[in-house]
Image (cartoon, rainbow, N blue to C red; front, side, top):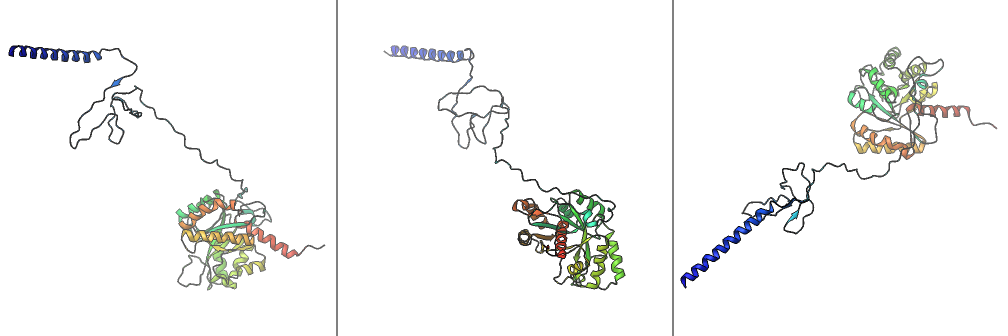
Length: 377
């Protein structure tokens, strides 16, 4: 009986060995099967050891390990629940250009007025300098007009250059004692801006220095004229002057009279910056028939963006009420920042941006109508 059991055991071992040999041969023959259009990959199940993350070649995530033979790696498609996943063999993916989503159609703004830059050179006989060198804005069209003046130009070159790059037409008033004025003025004119001269005058505060060659109340008439002559030769092609500081000097008729007389002789106008409510500039200019205008708003007494924006809103209100408004600012960061925002939008809100000469012309027209009186039947 024992021998019979040993014999049966040996037979079982033989059959097991034969079965194992057949299975091994069967798996080997798979490698010699004819190639098919798709390659098949077996999914291996590897037991995870503690602290070891399994990196599946098909895993999607920041730590996915992609086949090195494909570069750049194609993104795997959705996975199925089958034990064997067919992976189509594709060429490396090519980058594709995705068009951005279509936004709202841009509407072209209405064409603005054509501003004409005057040529420098000798004045035609009988033509006033301010009319010849004015940036021509065309006839009035009924819209409220706003002129923006930037004072103190030329001292801070960086900010002055930024002011000159603002959309035209602005009126840029260059300081008489700034350096390299011809170059700076030429750049401003190239951007389409009108040019004025910013003349330093004595303020009320004795400790505040208005700058070299300033007009002061202790000067006699000859010295005032000498200093004004020097000022007026600093820049070619100006339309007029306005006062830098001058809260004391512009209250002094004996000093302002020769200044305004020189402007009339040279065909220029006077813009009163109104640094004092007691300035005699406008009254004297009216008496001698000198073209003139006066500031309505200072944009940047408070040097913050919200404050400048508030003053621009006040400028709009003045223009709606009076038909015209003149605002004076300076080449400071908050002023330039707000003007970059405001200037492109003013026309759409119903205003007409003009150089100061257009408002001077407006005043001259009104003065002429007033002098002629009402029409007679």
